[in-house]
Length: 189
Length: 244
Image: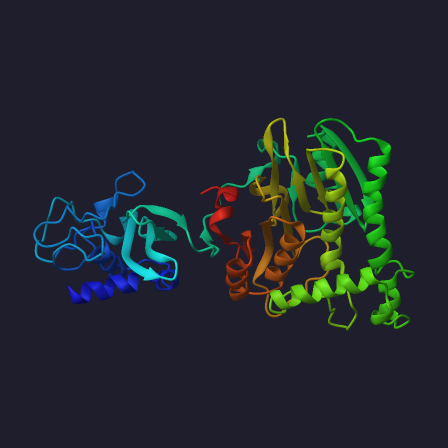
C-alpha cells in the first residue's frame, strides 16, 4: 500500500506526466495503481487500463467499488486492494491500444484537493488536466492555464467557417490586399 | 453588416457595425484616434516625436506627457513579461509600436462605444469587439501560419474576452526581437483587453516554452501557439478554437 500511495503521489504531478508524453508501460501500470477504479493485476503490467475505456468521458469514480477485497471505499486515492488478480475488469489490452481516461490520486495543494486526469488514445497521452475537486468530491474547473500540446484538427477553409474577422500576424497595407481579411471585408461578412 | 475600411499606421483597419453604417462624424472621430497615435509614434514619419527621439533631436524626458506615459507603460510590460517584451530595439532606438496599435484600438473602442452597442474592430490582424452580430457572438478566424488563406481554427469573442491578437514571424516582422532560437512561429492570445492580448502575444513569440508557461500562468489569457516544428499548444480556454 505504501508503494502505491507513493506511485499515486508521483502520478498526481502533472509535471511528471507532461515530461513523459509517450506513455510507457511503466506509466500505465503506475496510473492503474493510482486510479481508484482500475485494477492492477498482480504483475503490474498493462493489463488494465480498460477500466475506463468505455466511450463515456470518464468512468472513474471515487468509490473504488469495482475492486475486490479490502479497503477501498474512501476517495483518498488509496487504490483497490492488491490482492485480487482479476476483478470484473477485462484485462489484456496492450499499451499501444490503451485508450480512455485515467485519474491519479488526490493530492492536497494550495488550490485544495487536486486530481490529475489524463486521456489516453491508442497508448499516447492526448490530454492532461489538473482537476480541482469540490468538497463533495465532484469536479470543478481546471486550475492550470498551461498550454498543453493539442492535436491539430483539419485546417478550415475560410469558406467553411462563419467568421467576421481574421486574426493573424500584422499585415502591411499592401499585404492586406491579398489577405483573408480583405476577402471577407469585400464580401461584407 | 456595414464594413468601413481605412488605411492607417501602415496597415488597414476594418470596422464592422451590424446595425448599419456610422455617420461620417463618428467615423471621422475614430479615424482621428489612429491618426493621432500615428503622428506621435510613427518611426516612418520623420517629424514624429518618436523619430526625433530616435535621431537624438529630442530627449525622451522632454517629450510630451502622452509619449512619456506610453513609454512608461511599455516599460511596465517589459517588467511584467520578464523582459520578453521590450520597447528597446537592439540598435537602441525606442520603438513603441508594440503597444501603440493596441492602445489606439483601445481608445477607438471607447469612442465606438459612444456610437454603437455592437461593433468589431480589426487592425492589422488584431481584433477588438463589443456586443454581437445578429444575436451571435463575433467569430474570428485564426490564420494558419503555413497557409495564410486558411484557418487554424476560430475563436469567439464572448463575455469579457473581447480582444484577440496574433503575433508571428510572417507578414511584418516588427517589434519582435527574439531572445533565443525560434520556438514559435505564431502565437494567438485572447484577453479582456487588447493591449494585454497584443503584448503577451509578442512576448511569447519572442520567448520560449518557459516564457509561454510563465505568461499563461501570470496573465489572464487564452493562448494557441504554433511551434516551429508545426505542433500546437493550447491553454484550456483556447482548446475549443482549434477543435479537439
